[in-house]
Picture (cartoon, rainbow, N blue to C red):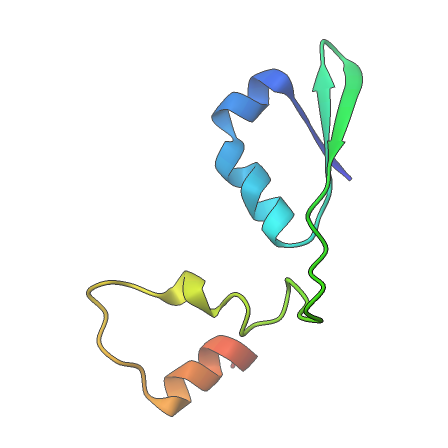
Length: 79
């Protein structure tokens, strides 16, 4: 499990949120002592947070042109 200090929490909040979005718990320390464990909410809809379709919104852009089926497949399945 990744661990960050309360000081790092202030400057690395975005990194913490990404870890949680990817289903990873994060330990929080204060002055070298474990303070808390921050865990992601488990989805009850059966969709894994790592499912490529669940994370498809990360590729969105306001100014982007529509994607072809081939481009979407490449983003979802790789290659």
